[in-house]
Amino acid sequence: MVCRCYVLPAMHKFVDEVRLRVKAGKGGRGAVSFLHEKYKEFGGPDGGDGGDGGDVIFRTAEHLMALSHLHPERLYRAQNGEPGKGKNCHGKKGKDLVIPVPLGTQLFDAETGELLHDFTEPGEFVAARGGRGGKGNAFFKTARRQAPRFAQPGEDTEEKEFVLALKLIADIGLVGFPNAGKSTLLKALTRAQPKIANYPFTTLSPNIGVMEDEWQRPIIVADIPGILEGASRGHGLGLSFLKHIERVRLIAFVIDLENAFVEDELRILKTELESYSPELLRKPSLVVLNKIDRIGDKKFLRALLSSYRKQGLQPQAISALTGEGIDKLRETLIKKLRRKWTKSPQQSSKK
Ligand SMILES: Nc1nc2c(ncn2[C@@H]2O[C@H](COP(=O)(O)OP(=O)(O)OP(=O)(O)O)[C@@H](O)[C@H]2O)c(=O)[nH]1
Ligand SMILES: [Mg+2]
Image 1: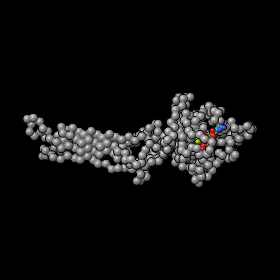
Image 2 (image 1 turned 45 degrees about the vertical axis):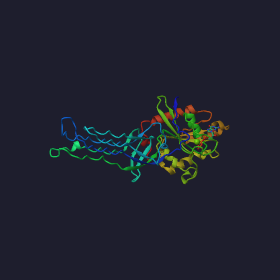
Image 3 (image 1 turned 135 degrees about the vertical axis):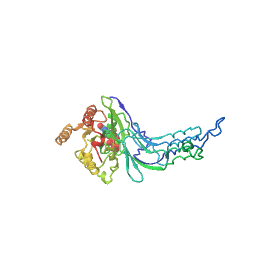
Image 4 (image 1 turned 135 degrees about the horizontal axis):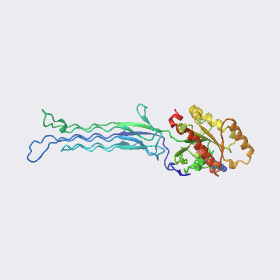
């Protein structure tokens, strides 16, 4: 299976909210000009119109997974329109400024808080329209006013402020306690290279990896930072990162078999998720028991598997480290997603 890697560069801080100032281009001024030709004394007005200013456009970019490339201190400006010229030459339109954003970005008006656009699909949104170019004096010629000595200035534009907030749109979200092996599993399923270490909270912001199904359709997997009991009350990293699983299609609960309270892990995780948003528990999910290579007592494992089955769950036992059970898990994940494939992320989750 071919896998593509979209993981964030390590030096980039994961930013999922940013305030931006933008300004569309001003319209170019119209020209005041009169035709001067040999043997033609009064050629009449020929001042052309100014060009329209460029727009500021937000557009989704497939390779982006965060808002880290945007700078709140910068003013994002589109080009101004060029002034009109003599001989009825119109000024050039200013270049649009295209700001790339990841899929899943929500665009808010910073002043009113109104949601202006939600990039749940690839596309673009014109956030600020360029000013119109002014009319040249040729436009103002009438029967009674043969030689207008004025033209229109270009339309000015105002600075606008937006808040961009990212809620990742992934197919699978890996959820579990710190140290459960979520990043190791992401690495096993995709070509992502997240940081892995034997201490809790190695992952401080989501990692993204991409695997592909047999038709090379990309399946985006998000490794979410670890969740502790009491996270909803601010323990550990809290629950703010759960916004990144609001729009996943499938949650894979990664259970750490080495954990002393392994039987309670799933219940605790679900309670924390529910306190963030009960919608999360209505998503399709899968239970993944990780670190089977560390379990000598197979009887214990069988009992645990059977208790999950009795609850109507289909648990899968794997070792993200050695790769045992990974192919089967990948197949199950793809099969489960396929059943949901026709639904948009919006339909499968709403907040
Ligand atoms: N023996 C064994 N060790 C594993 C397995 N999966 C992960 N580990 C180890 O468990 C430790 C934690 O793994 P991570 O992948 O960093 O865990 P995590 O869930 O991403 O942890 P946080 O980012 O802190 O939430 C590392 O030392 C891994 O090598 C496994 O299947 N078997
Ligand atoms: Mg991790």
